[in-house]
Length: 280
Image (cartoon, rainbow, N blue to C red; front, side, top):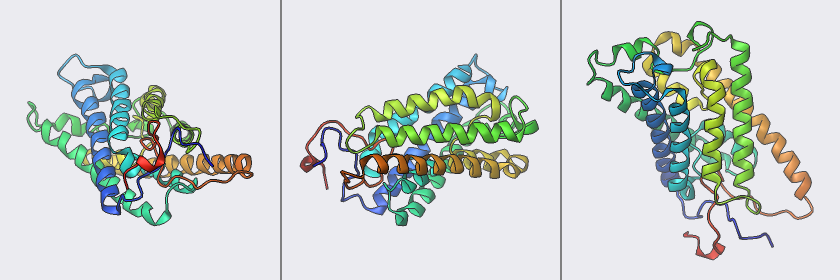
């Protein structure tokens, strides 16, 4: 019988609608916090902030905090993915029914665009109505001349693939049904902060197709034209990492198979409690 010290599963009564609401809300928080920090307080990200700003450190910490908070709040409902790449990785790892994947992806896109739209609405109150932020790309991700450091497609592809793969492995490891940790939201948030330290100067850091789509919508045509890279490479990194993780874990645990936790994600690991106490 598997240990119950760190049950990492979604309550069986979580309907697709509740899951969708949780994912939309969490992705909204992620994009609103990240892009708000980038456009309102970080000259390093856009060059137009009126305040002294927090710099890239503040942007990276903002993402880590939003993910940790969102996952802790709604993780027990949906798993707290807030990222299409993570959702696909979790499904490949066998912890989410494939039938739920479209529900998660649609909710994440809606939540992400809504978060970016709120930031855009707030910028309407600035001196230029947010025009400078839009001209600068609205903190969108890009390569070549649209990269903060003018990095080419190859290093951008590498950082998106590698950083997202690392993220998915951390997610799957910390939310494992028997060896996971109730500190999973904090560990995953910290991982994202660390990855952003490297990725922000290269391509403004995606690791999340919903985040890149949300800002490209407001950034405009040039940014939309490069969006494909930030759909393909994070997903590719997530799928490869999840596939290798599943092979490794199944090979190690084949002698003692246990039911995989459905929809385990950054917020799915919970504090010690008997399974019977989990709400249905």
